[in-house]
Length: 332
Length: 210
Image 1 (cartoon, helix red, strand yellow):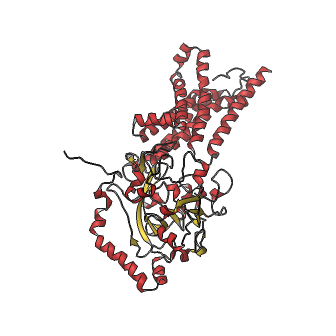
Image 2: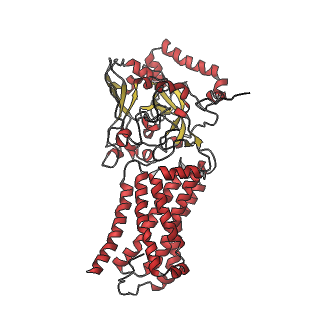
């Protein structure tokens, strides 16, 4: 008797590499090799300057295609949806508030402070922070805790490389991230009724060192729009979207679990880990399924069916090992 | 609704003819506008990235607004002495129920008519429980709005049944409050308006007694 065993992730093997990527793998390898080669051959500075856009309307030049794992039904979310429907309470609580209110925000010049339990703390200019790292495109699913999801092509750097570079001490167990506080440019930070600022998020160091985790500086090949977290944001695709802290100004290596904003606000609804998990419901809605926002289907996707949510958002193979032996129902 | 007594002395309104014959159709058309706008947006792809969420929230907003508008009729009459507004009360109340009903219908559609999932929602999720309780209270009010039912029930029993509109409105505001993640200004505004409308009624009852 033939026994068919479905893989735990629910992702069939033919879904792991899209056919077009598979067929073009030699070009893709060549392209990434070219970038790596130019980094070695020329000076790193000139390669960096060649890749980085001069302004917000210019695209990144020659960004290598990095690890992306899409299913057959994963279609890119159109740019106008990914940049017009955002949760970024610094610019208001409505989904279209960020796109409407983020105009006055000035993402550059920008500095990032790295401190805490590490050998090489410092305050770095945006370019100096990025320069040692290779920019890559990563196409990831993004699953919001509110049960909708998108597929977004990010441009970013490996967070694992960033962690290594600042040489965390043995006692450092977590990284705490902070969003900028700039009420004069962020209307949601003025007055009462919002969240306590700054917005804080955190990862365990081993989570941050997972190859999937990136710090993104762009999407769709162009610098991040303000409403998506310009100039630098976290992307951890196996976790709910609120873990992806935006407009990061500080990274601290710490010993104890950071008090992330949403958990501090409402710990019965939001945890520290926030791993996408269809079996652990949010108290106010089911997490078993989600609505994919990709503009597909008639009437703007109104008639499209919800789709089942995948364990770890479909990245189980890559990240499940981080949580071996943990009870994910209590560590939600 | 209960506070029918103590109507101010009738005044002849300046546009008596219009108020008698033309007002109702005009208000009826106005009440349809929010729904018409939603239909227009739906068929012109103007519902944003998450169309179902837009539709459900939009209808929920208007359901609450119409509930408050219907509940404002009697206080408005008390304050201004305009008798003609009372003639709009039933229609406004029915529009409130209609917007509640299509709001719930949209929610059911969002769950693709998966009744076991919806029942799970009602049992597990407080804001859905509260919202469904409000719907349950409003349904018999809409069902008893015809003249012949009022006559058959008798005025006293009918008024007693229709007291349910008050807890339903309170539950509606609580439902909105529980649904929101942060930034409670909006439900707070609805709550304050509802409290003010109750305040006018309570003051009137109090003033009548002394």
